[in-house]
Every structure is written in structure tokens, then in C-alpha cells.
Length: 466
View 1 (cartoon, rainbow, N blue to C red):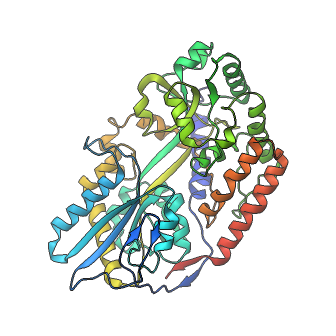
View 2: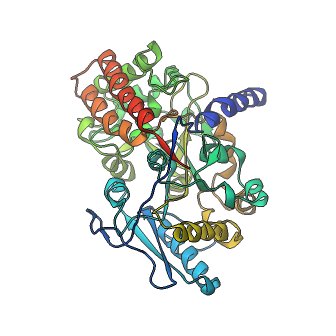
């Protein structure tokens, strides 16, 4: 379950050339000048009103949108959500720069509300000037030609402070379209008490992210299925929506599938992909999941885990702290030491047809990334800023464990221009697989066909801001 230092160095080198480079979402694009006139009001259900000037006299009004996301900050125990951090940033900027006459409004929306609150707000009074979100939700907007490159505000000091691999994730076609703020790494967590109850003490470890072999995984899941009390289940599984689908995607790498080829197209029809899907299908027959998992959401499994009715669930470095010593950590099943995933969150700036607003939005981000106090709010997750990470590394629970585990990180999205489009199809096919409506081979073929059609359409219509 351990591994030598030489193996870690070899895997780290492999990770740098595959995963970190894979997360550089390369784009084949044509330049497009986008002229938009935007301002006004948007309801959570969608946007209304025609575009008009966002300026009142000499005042420039900016709208920052952020999905409702929990967040804790080591430097401030009152912080519970990320929009509170963004509001602190906005307030500090307005207080320190009254002469610029910029007002900033921070608006939150539900996690599944990107279409209504971003896309449907284009060319309305409530278009976002700045979006803070997870990168995998932000990529599509860059292909719309709405997001401006930010290289002109990245000073040598800012560039040097952020980890290189995170800059790689933020760069598209040689230009930087997103400013990274923090990352989270996802692995699996197991309930130590349930493991001890069924005789799996040998798999319980302290302060370690383990990796189990396939035989060990089969033994653990079968033992749990045979010995857990009624109403308690071995492992998470869900497919009722696209929420949490990234963790199910990670499971598809259990037999060595990379999910995508070098051109960015899905390749689950290859033997490794079919084997990963077959492993998920067999889990239904072997009792590894809660009943009728195709009808469950990620929140259903989260509730079961919190109530002690699910032995294995996913956690990241942030949620890990909430469980203390009651859980152990293990990578997703893989062929070479297990797999993990990581997600970066940060900012992008939209061009709404008003040069003053673009300038103000960029100036706001320049201010944030030159202010150590505002960057410190990222500590709680894994900060993108190296200086903040080093300052708080001993206060961030599990920092060293997760930092060392980056060698196991894999890419579940590939280099494609429409992640959101792929997610619309993925969970539907997995639901049919879990329900017995599709074989593993049929599921693989369906996913390849539908997702690659989305990818091809995304490439054909991709446009980057000039």
C-alpha cells in the first residue's frame, strides 16, 4: 500500500507530462470580436431586459457572479461561503480606490444555474463582468468568445507566486484566460468504524492516502457487502443528475482507461474503458452500492455517509477536515497506484461591449492578486499562491498528504471545448448501465458517440476573444 520514493519520482514526472499538460485545455479557435452592450437585472430563473449602459455618469458598475459554494478560511473563522470572500475583496477594492468610482455587486447563484445566470444573461442588463467558479464550468464560456485574456495584468511577481501547473490549467491557445485562486483534490474516504466492524482492520490507516490493488478493492467491497448491517452499503454510486459525475468518471479509469485520446476524443470503447464500465455494472450485482443507484443524487450518498450508512464516499482536502479521525483516505481504483482528481477555481473577465468595464474588472483582479491578505482567504483549500500555501501549510489539514498525492491526479475532462455538454449525456448513460438497460459495451459505444459529437461541435464553433 506504500511505494518507494523512486516510484513517486517516476509517477510525478509522468503526471507532469500527462495530467498537468492534459489540464491545459488547448483550443482550436478563430478570433472573434464580440461587441455587447450589457447591464441590468437577472433573476435566478434567467435574465430579462435589454442591454443598456452600466455606467451612471462617471461611475462604472461591475457584476461579479459566483455559484453558492461552501468555503472556510483559516485566517477568518466567520467565513462559510466563497461569496463572502469575494464580497470582502469587492469592499476592500472600493474602499481603497474611491477615486476610480467603481461599484461592485456580488451575486450568487445555484450550482446548476450556469445556463440561466451566465449564458442566458449575455446581452442583457445583468451579464457578468467577472465570474468566479470551478474551471471545468468556466471553459465553455471561453469558447463563446466572451472571455478576455488576462496576460496583461499578470506581473512577473504574480506569475512566480502561482504554481506552474496551475498556470498550465489556466492557459488556452497560449493565452491566460483565468486567474487561479485555489484548488481542491478529490480522493475516496472510508468509515473506519464500519471497516473495523466487518474485519477490515488491516486496511485502516492513519494520516495516509492509500492505494489498493484490484484484488484488495474486490476483497474490501465484497466483505462490506456481505457483512454490513441491513440499510448500510459499501460504496457511493449515483446517476440521477450531473452533480458529482466527475467522481463516477474517475472510477472509469480503474482498468487503465485514459477516457480521451490525444485528439481530445472519448475512447471508452477501447478494452480498458469497457472494463471500467463493466466493473461499475458488476457492482450492482455484487451489492456494492445502495439499491437503485441510478435514481440517487450525490447528496443522497452524502447523507448516507454522514449518517454512518455508507462505508466509502468521496472527500476532498477541504471536506476531509470536517470528519477528523473518523475517516481514512484512499485513492480511486487504478492500475498504477490509484487515481485522484483535482479542481481549480478562479476568476475570468467577460467583455460586455464596454471597454471601461473590462478595464475596471482587470484592475480589480490586479488589486486582488497583489494583496496578500485577500489571497490568504484561499487557505482552507489548497491555495494557488505558493506564498500563501507555505504560510499556512501547517494549519491546512492534510496539506503534505495531498501535495504528495498530486502524482496520482488524472484528467477526467480531456482537452475539449464543451465540458458542460458532455456532462449532460454522461450521467444518463451511467443510469441506464446501472439499471441494466445497457451492457458495458453498449454504454461505452453510446458515450463515445454522443460525447464525441459534442466535442466535435464544440471545436467547430469555438471562438476566442481577440
